[in-house]
Amino acid sequence: MQEEQQHVDVLIVGAGLSGIGAAYHLQVNCPGRSYAILEGRERSGGTWDLFRYPGIRSDSDMYTLGYSFRPWTQARAIADGPSILKYVRETAKDHGIDAKIRFNHHVVRASWSTPEARWWVDVERGPEREPVRMSCNFLFMCSGYYNYTAGYTPEFAGTADYTGRIVHPQHWPEDLDYAGKRVVVIGSGATAMTLVPEMAKTAAHVTLLQRSPTYVLSRPAEDPIANRLRRHLPAKVAYGITRWKNVLLSMLFFRLSRRKPERAKQMILGGVRQALGPDYDIATHFTPRYNPWDQRLCLVPDGDLFAALNAGRASMVTDHIDTFTPSGIRLKSGQELDADLIVTATGLDLQVLGGIALDVDGVPVDPAATFNYKGMMYSDVPNLASSFGYTNASWTLKCDLTCEYVCRVLNHMDKHGWRQCMPRNTDPALVAEPWLDFSSGYVQRSIGKFPKQGSRAPWRLYQNYARDLMSLRFGTVNDGVMAFSNPSARS
Image 1 (cartoon, rainbow, N blue to C red):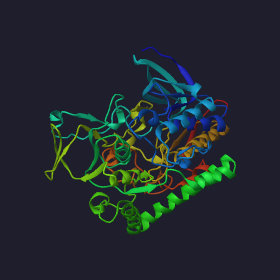
Image 2 (cartoon, rainbow, N blue to C red):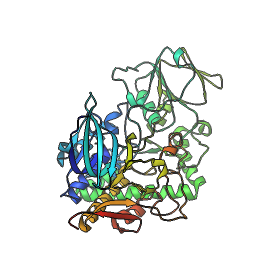
Image 3 (cartoon, rainbow, N blue to C red):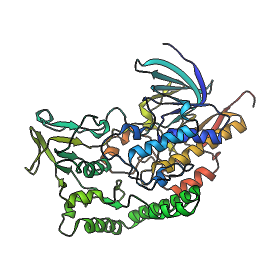
Image 4 (cartoon, rainbow, N blue to C red):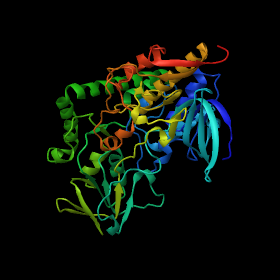
């Protein structure tokens, strides 16, 4: 194997929203440490470069999905994918981070050596997958939570008989023309809710086919308070106020959903009823069997989905698929849906740590056998953190705090001459619980691969920004759980 032995203090894996943010925090808070970003694809941006389907947008507002250090200044709070991608890349360029990215570097394995206090990282470089080896003192995984190679598509009977085209949104063909065609979108998540109103603008008709309904909320695409504040205050001040306003409102509604689910349910369904009118079958198409926030809510900016339904350009069908037919889909009820194009918006294939293989001193690491420390590190795994966002709020809120905390840990190690940090569970009463308390299909399919959370702090995920802020920004680093060891020669 050809070895390119290049060493950096911190190796960041992934050049998407999280990886660019991690690089910024390192530059500001740990300016003496060298770093590089390895990106498996040929472009930066992660999710916002990968997904190209019609109408691609965030379902979180950009005042909380945006970085804490870079104000979002556009009028639209619910931004489209190209605008978010531009924001991420401009952030990288303005801070010189883009020069640190090594594209077409796919990480396949990382091996920790305690005597050397470093990770040896095996990489496949370029289209020829040339093997390269690098090393680092700290490995920061910012590679997201799903498989970029392919999305999840169930095994549907009869797909070989269907004469039209079947497309998954994760890899949208550039040559796909759906104008004037009958389209069926299978799914009930954020992707389906985005696709239907956008495709309905030019398609003959779009049918959203769901097995079970989802809670759907309408929200203005623009935040009038944020736009007003920005006209009268400096950008950073206006951004900070709006960010906290939105954080507190989302926390309030999440708490209401947990403590008074029936009240939250009626608030959501009342909004749908107001948008679609009293005669629409809301009980069938918009009333889930679960409570709000047992799964993620779907956001439709300016009620665009409801507008498409009211105009007759789109329709909802709630049923189970029996089989694909040459001309479309036959449902369990016997109803047949004719379709020139079928879009399987059926979810993601979740992946732990980018799918890389880990070992510590030659012993393989099974992430599912570990406890997750503060939502970012893994029990008995040294000098490794991963950036993972909230399930009930914007991704970047937690990622920003994670990056700050990693920098605090690195600076603590540097100050005291330690080369190794590793969370260790010494609590015999700690109870293992699923990493995410979410009933969504895409989570339940893969939850067994992920680490466990514990029954109490610091192993518990509270999904609470204010609580995490106090813990990660102001809490002690040397908390008795994080073990610092392996002193450097100078100490």
